[in-house]
Each structure stands twice: as structure tokens, then as C-alpha cells.
Length: 589
Image (cartoon, rainbow, N blue to C red; front, side, top):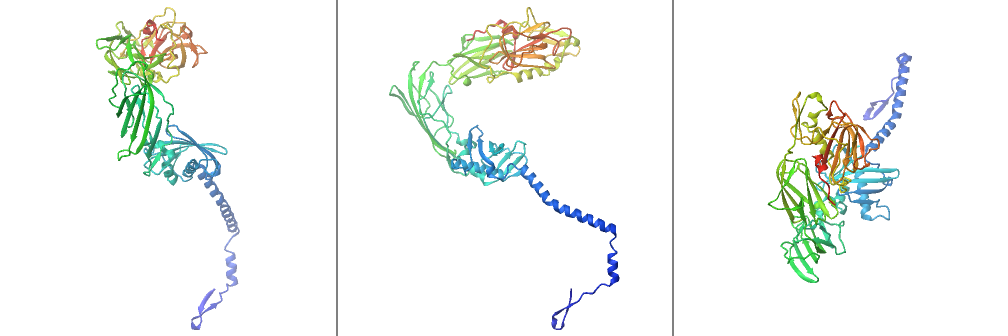
């Protein structure tokens, strides 16, 4: 309604003008029937869209919840397993459960809060190296996450099984980093370790250790090993101790049948009269670690133990102890066997060579003796130093070329397979190294052969021997080193050189059909280029010396016009001469 001003300034209503009948009629005629129909359709569409808006919101919310690490409901999760960087596992439940340790319950709740407050990100920064595996038990199953922490940051990164990454800056991160349950993230939380000259770890009888956390406060370490027993450790002809963390001060006392032999500060320079084998001494070492500006820890450790005097470690090669005047001769492709006596822990035996060995020696125990098989893998002189604790010996070696090596020359069509790739291309070296045994192999300490090795077939002699050289004239392909195998032209049954266990069977372009037998202690024999393999020869099958393995064939490397076998022997990651195995009985026991 329009207004007009009355006299005196007050507005006065003005009645609206009425439209004439002609104008009303004209207005009604503006919309045709088709237009009205279109208007109705648009109206329907608008109503439908309005009705769908809540559905769109519901779908969007579902996708967001689905992609987020967890649902935001505490009752959904019943328990959590926290596995630290060093494998320490802790099972916790929500703090709401009456049976739960309150502090552990808070850890559960803190990880839940981290999961509830996340944003999507890409990748984990390099400085977040502290990795915790977290497994949540839910009312319908398990959920797995990996948390990455940094002791310098109040953030954590979370990865799911689908490889998505999420970032959380929740205050619960800081709470966890300053809790005793994050001790594995801090280098300074590791208490000192005391070892003997023979690298035996001495377990403390008392230990208290505190370390600095992210907020600068100190937490008491709760996870450590102590003993209430007086343990006995061996000692040879000298007494030496090593701390992984040097103490601020240290005191040592040694008793012999109740009489004090040594009472001194520090563990260096211990001097005793000649010790006799079988003598038993009592020790106590008390070490203090004071807090300084240079470290982030403090504590105290007490070690009360006994030491039994035993014979010192000794080393022999070919039955001869280390002597400056003795040089041990060997032929390339063979091996040297080092024998070690009075070595309690072979894992602490250190063997170094100058020039360096191509592959590490294989160390194994047989009864009270420890052996190290050292391949003669490089022609020339070499020194070999063997160390166990403070005992060390050096041997001189001289590796000579194989005197009866033969140069073979064949036309390109006379041989089958890609010798260039296998030899000059390095395929065989790489493959041998990838299959090479270590001390961790299942049969590392089970040496199965008895006596010398046999032959692959009756009256079988190799056409090409280990250490020979090969020239393929048409392509001028020349090997740049000695051949690491024997190549036979034979037919019929192929037999195992010695007792062992089937490690692997397979087929490829270089080896053809092959079988690898594990004889223990890192010694393998390889039977390649076979035409057929016995059906029951699968991994783990035990074979005896002379057992049939399969038939000679024409797969892989070999001679084009005949069946044959390619035979290799490897010790560790290095090929050795199969003939040496046939000539050298294994008399170790």
C-alpha cells in the first residue's frame, strides 16, 4: 500500500489503483498452455532437488567417515595393542574399564583422540622415525594403524592399511611423548650395557635409570632386565670390561674365596697374578651416571657376579696355530677351514681380511668347536685376522691360480644359451649372491655331508672344468674371469653329490631346469640344465648321497648337440670348485 503525507506531517494511506478488466484479461493471456506445463515441470524438478539435498549431505558424511581413520565413538573399540619400535608390546583398554590401570587407560584414550582429530596429508616426514604399530580390537574385528612420532615435534602421522596418511596435532600426541610408554623413542632411555672381553653381556643386579622426555622432565625407566641370582661368566687369561655408556664414576671389587684381590676405582688396568683354569672369582661393579649438560640421563647400576677361569680362545688353520713364519697355500676356487677353540659365542667371532674377502666367511659350530669356511676367492697374498674378545691371531694366506686351467674355444653355434649375459654380464654372480646362504638359514648349523662328495653320474667327467676360460669365436665373447661351474656332456640320471635338503627347484633361461641342494652351514650344490626333475623333489625334501635328482637335458647353458648338466658349488655367496669337495673329506666333528 502506498502512503502520502497528511497535513501536519502524518502519513495517510492511499488506496491502490485497481487494474482495469482489460488489463486482467491481458495478464491471464500471457501464459500459454505449453508455458504452464513447462512451469509445472520446473516446479516438480525444484521440489525433487530440495528433497535430495539431505541425501547429498548424508552421502558426503558417509564418505568422510569412511575415509577417516576411525569412527568417532569410544564404545566401538574394546582394547588396543601397542607395539613399539623395538617390538615391545603393551595391551591396554579404555580408562572407563574398572580393571584397567589408570595410566594405561589414558594411553588408550590418547590414541583414540589422535585418531579422532586428523586431517588428510601425503607422506610421512623423514624426522618422524619413531614407529608404533597399533591394533584396535573392535566389536566386529581388528583395525591396524601405524603411528609415526618425532621427539622434537608435537605431531604424529598415521597410516592405514590402504596406504592413506593422516596428520594429527591433538594434545594427546604431547601426552604420549611425555609418558613412560614412549621410552623407546628416546635414545637416552637405553640403560648402560656391561660386557666382558668375550662380549658376554653381564646382567645387573640393581638398576635405576631416568631419561629426559620432550617437555624437559625426567621419566623413570620401567622396562629393563635385572637378576637376583649370582650368575657366572667365563674369563680367559685377561680381565677386561666394556660399558656402552661411560659412567661418571665406577668402583670395582674382586674377591677370591672371601679375600679381596682388587679394590679400585674404574674397570681399566685390572692386574691379577697368573690365573689357573677352574678358579672362581667374585665381582662387584657399581657404576654411577650423573646428569650433566652433555647427557639427558642419570642413574646407577650394580653388577654382582662370578667369573670362572677358562682356557683362552685359540685358532688353527690346517691344524697350525697362527705363526708369522707360516704362509698357508691354497688354490683359487678351493677354501680354507679355520678351527676355533674355546669360543662360547660364535656370533661374536670377528674375521677380517686384507685385501677384503668377496663374501663373508660362513661360521658354524660342531660340538665344542667353531669353524669358519673361507673361500679362496682372489688370487694373491692375503692376511686374515681372527678376533674373539681380546684374543686375536693373524694368518698369512697365498692363493694361487688353478694350474691345470684350460682355455676353451668354441664357435657360436656349438654352445646353447647366453654365456655372455651369464658370465660377462654378471648374471651368475648376482644370482649366486642372491641365493647365498647366511648364518640365518634353516640348516646353518647342520652339516650333512659325510666324507668326500661323490659324482653326478658314473664315470662322468666334465668337458669344461671350474676355473677354465672360454672364448666364443664368432662373437668374440671372452670371459673376463675363471668359469664358476663344471659343464658336462652326459645323458641319463643325475645324482646328488652328498646328503642334504632340497632348497629350491625352478627354471630360467640361464640355468634351465635346476635343483639346489642345501648341505648345511652355507654349502650348496646346484644341478642345472636338466631335462627332467624327479616329481617328489620339492623344497624341504631330504636326499642322500647318490640319490637320483633327475635327468640330464638341453635346457639353459650347455652344448648344442648333446644332453648335459651344469654343476655349481657355492659356499656362502661365493662359487667354489666342486672337484675340491670330491677330493677333500669332511672330518670336522
